[in-house]
Every structure is written in C-alpha cells, then in structure tokens.
Length: 413
Ligand SMILES: CC(=O)SCCNC(=O)CCNC(=O)[C@H](O)C(C)(C)COP(=O)(O)OP(=O)(O)OC[C@H]1O[C@@H](n2cnc3c(N)ncnc32)[C@H](O)[C@@H]1OP(=O)(O)O
Image: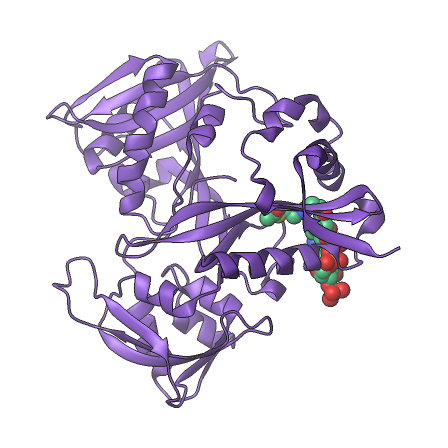
C-alpha cells in the first residue's frame, strides 16, 4: 500500500503522539496525551500514514532567530522527526522533511532550523551545523572571581522567576546570534508549571534574581543542589537548569552566588556558548572545566537574499556566492555587498541574484554553517566544503562573515 504523507487533523493528534513515542523509542509518552496537545500546530504537524496508522512524524513551529547584528528572521523550527522502527529506511523522513521545507518556503520563512539527534541525518537536506554549546563543571574550592560584583541577588519564588524570565531572555537574545524566541509554553515547561510530555516533572528548584547597582534585573538562575559528603567533608553539587545573564554584572552576581554556596564544591551549568565568559571571570580559569562541546542548532537556508541581507557583517566587502541546492530553494548565484553603517554593530548588507561570475561555491548546508558567523568560511574552504573560484575569495568572505559574538542557541525544542 502507498504511504501517504500529509498534515494531520484534530482527530489524529493521539495517533500522531503515539507514532512519535514509537519513533523516539519512548514507551512512557502516552501518559501525557493532554500535555502534548499544547503547542501542536496542526497545519505544521506532519505524519506518514501506512493505511490509517501514523508511522512517521515531524512538526514545526515559527520562531524568531537572531542574526549577527541583532536583526531577526522567522525560522521554521523543526522537531519530533521520527519513523517507527518497522518503517525505517523507506524514505519517510525524507518525504516529511522535504514536505516541511516546501511548506516553509511557501510561508516565506527564510530558514528552517532544528537540533539534530545525530550528525549524519540532516546535511543531505541542506541543513548545516551553525551553533555550538558546551557544559561547564566548576570546582568551587579553586574558583575565585576577578571582581566583586556590583548589585544584589535575592531568592524569588517560582512565579516571580517565571515572570522575569521572558524580559531578560528578550534582552539576551537581541545580542546573541543563533538564539530563538521562546513562547509562554516554553517557559511554563522550564519552570515546571506545565508538563514536559514524556519526561518526569522537573524537581523543585531555587530561583535567584540578580539586580545591577541601579536595581534593574540583570540575571536569573534556577538551580538544584544535591548534598553529600566524602569522609564527612561536604562535597555537594549544584546544577543550574537556567543561567541567564544580560550583562557582565549579571553574570558576576550569579556566579558569585553559585560559587559561594555552603556545602557545595561542584557547580554544573549546561548549554553554555562557545565563547563562555566564565573562565575569564576567574582568577584561575582551570577551575572551570568545559566538556562536550558540540554542534547544537542546524540552519537550512531557504531564502538566501533575506537571510544574508538580514544580518550584519564584521568587515565591508563584496562577494558573489554560488549556492548548490538540489532541492532548489537556495540554489543560484548571489551578490552580497556589505558596507556603510556606523560599524558599531557591523555593516549592513544587500544581497540579490546576479549573473556575475561566482567567487565562492558552496552547498546550502555549508551556507547554513557559516551564515551565523560561528564556523569560519576559511575553515570550511580548507576542508574542501567551500570552493574558491577566485584566489583569496575565502579569506575575504571569512572576514565578512566572522562575528565577534559566537552564535549560541540555548533553547531546546
Ligand atoms: C530534529 C529532530 O527531530 S532530530 C530527531 C531525529 N529522530 C531520531 O533520532 C529518532 C530515531 N530515528 C528515527 O526515527 C529515524 O531513523 C530517522 C527519522 C532518523 C530517519 O527516518 P527514516 O524514515 O528511516 O529516514 P529515510 O528512510 O528517509 O532516510 C533518509 C536517508 O537518511 C539516512 N539516515 C537515516 N537516519 C540516519 C542516521 N541516523 N544517520 C545517518 N544517516 C541516516 C538513510 O540511510 C537515508 O539515506 P539514503 O537515502 O542514502 O539511504
């Protein structure tokens, strides 16, 4: 029987959730059926059907993605891609991804984004790894901050923290390429107000709000502590589930709080940027150990002019790019011209289709990797993933595309 790929109706939500549970190998997910319905946009919730049985899933939602320089584009954020083990390697995920990409292009979304469960899956569809993250473990006995923080930190209840979070995050993401806007449901789930389907309810946690010397909110952390001893010497661990600082003072205040918790000798903070400031805030950077640095957000360009003209560039310049895209969305030759502006947040740019000779040739996936400034054009060219048609073009583009703030997306979806 032919396998049908289409968006679902309201009456198919339970079947879709069950198919995702099977595809993602989670036998416990079904218990959360009502919680799962929240956040599903039916016209963006796809399934492959074998007869009337859903056997593969994919859904998306619109999310604002910050570009270098603070501009934003609407991204189609793709998640819950899964195929039942009985139906794998029959092209179902391919059909779902391609259907979603075509729909995203019709909706006018310049990019599609996702978090890849495995590196090897999504490059073939034109996605490229664009941001990185890493986890930190800090030995509080060795960690001393270089400056005394100015301002204050107070414990707040969960609802106060929940109320402060969106405003702080909006300030944070304005200056951080690669981050995504978060909706109310995201925050409700993070604070344990709404259930995260298929996962245990988060354990209760402490919330601290940092205020700068002027009394303005500058940071927010949510953390839990596990106390234990080694030979009756305290050896507790604190783990921050949220560490959101919008200024140097905000970061110093939150670190000062966490690193000085009595009975705690280890502080863990996950999902930090590639250019995390913590080591530079310590008198001994080795007190903070980074681990598991890895790709996080993958970007798939769909509308190249909208994407490239939406960001700012570190250096002025002109470059003609030839983008190879077997699916067609991003294919073509594009003239990018960056210049002007006062340079304080990079140079604005124009980007349009051109017949001029190409200077650099790259796949849609490679463009996805370099478009936020995290991975260098030079590095990809050296690896043979970007081809120079004119000597020196990669170095020129590298200087333009590089961005001083590493792209970072700490938003799991
Ligand atoms: C954004 C997110 O949701 S990430 C979550 C992704 N989902 C998971 O990891 C859940 C477990 N895995 C699965 O459900 C499935 O294996 C999927 C969704 C990854 C792939 O589903 P399938 O329907 O089997 O994919 P499909 O048949 O379209 O395969 C397409 C191609 O990708 C390749 N491929 C599929 N999975 C992988 C993988 N894990 N690693 C490398 N290549 C892969 C296939 O070999 C195939 O290549 P080919 O055409 O050259 O033979």
